[in-house]
Length: 120
Image (cartoon, rainbow, N blue to C red):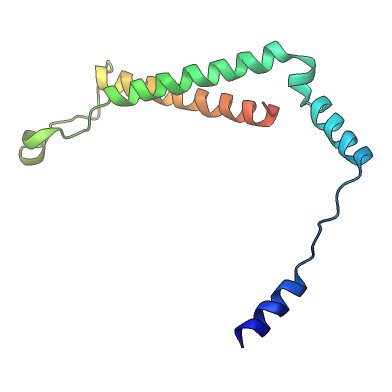
């Protein structure tokens, strides 16, 4: 039984795969080498600058998120809680850090989207 199945399986497999003609291979190679997105083709300095800004904002976002603290840190926040009022004339360090982190995160999303669309 197994030799019959093996013989049927080997007959179904083609012995040679048709090759792509050399002319079409050359056209594909030329297209791959010459095709660049608009920004990369016309303004390479701009596309690389945008990518550098996206990288800088990514690193800054990681650093800012590492400095963030939770609202209720440790056992004292769990048991005693915090006294917070709705009115604060000046922002504290945590609120300023949160606002800066939000701005950096939005800038990272914008630059990463532009870099992604530009096709680098």
